[in-house]
Length: 569
Figure 1 (cartoon, rainbow, N blue to C red):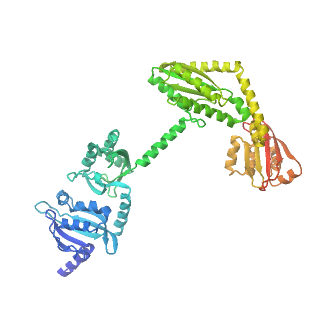
Figure 2 (tube, one colour):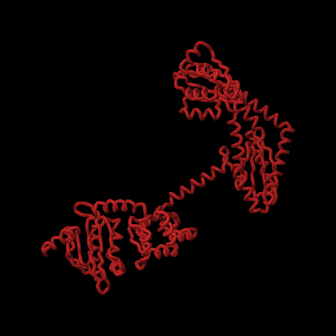
Figure 3 (tube, rainbow, N blue to C red):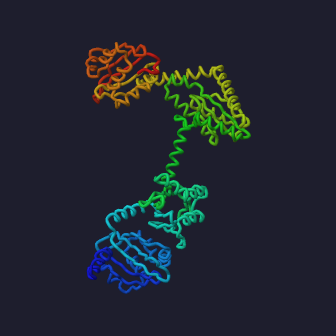
């Protein structure tokens, strides 16, 4: 290959790949071009210091704003010299540059020859278009930089780092060149919350990281609270993942740090809600028996000098349910619970059974609780509700004896309630309330709801729409409806196949056929069927016709009787 051919070869293969190439004295900034970018040639021809040249590029907005700060690090001779004389062979930085044709990704590199030193401070500064793969990676990293406020490429084998992206408050002092020093100093300067210091230090410990990636190649993460620009602490997450050139002998990782404060706080709130829901009674929202058992164990361990236990039972819940329906009973329980919260706001109250409540207080004496109970009873009486109560106080070490004594006192109070005829007067009052509801409202659905528990199932069925609204339904039939997308006919088919004895199956299917039911109902007042279930239970089904409504609905009433209603339809 002759001299001309060699020159052409160099021109094509080396200079041709660069937009700009210059020999630079990294100490003085003096430079001479091998090749100059034609687009910049006229605008910057009078600048003879490479560092001033780079600052001019940034000030003239040739560098996109999000990359300007990191780019300007390479206009600092002290920073460049430290890296050039530190044994690195090449320094690379990718950024997005503005051109006449629009923005494009470019790769800025400093090629450092062997033996570069303060005595021989020459290096090569180059600028070239990024290749397709690099551009795609740069776009991805740019997108990531909107999520992460710190992105580093770290080399634990050599204890070095390259900054891909870092916020102002994350940048280390220019004298710091070791990643272990930077990460440790970050905590020592008070940037990590004192409660998270140990977790943070354990995470950044080099041997811990090496051991993790020797055994696994999965992401390693840590959450901690870091000081924000405003002075407070916010939750952050640090992630480490192996770089593409990672090996056990070349431990090169990518380090990402992002703010996860809102996400983490929402997660903590959700966890607390789950714990709280687990500890709460679904109806009254008081604490439940599980939480009660936990708390009395805690009281026994901590042994407060005085604990007062209030043990209560709601009088007349069973009669209220039977006379006026379970909704009325639920209303009473909720009223009692709300009254407990009102009169014992600083103490823990529990619903430990159907109509039994307990309040544990470490701040109120026996006499004080007695006075509060009297006010509570007066308040509940305004709603015609009544409670039986027992109170006992003592040392927390005897918490189980205290609760037992309070329960015994409540039982005696309840005996007085029945002995004094208060129970019968309450029942008469409920009978009068029921009669008034039925005579004034004449509400058939309400009446059926009250007597529904005597039946195995009571339904209003719209034949044309194959849908239903139920007055009373056992739990297992609800599940059948859910499985059949709330198609009544489909649910009845499943019921017939699984619950009706074989010798009654065909007759049951014929009677419950919705297609022929209107014609059969029009021929008579009601359809009745006696059948036996597979478990031997005698059942009766009665289907009654209702008038066709103005909306065109053809509703029927289906009443199932038999058994005790607990596992029937």
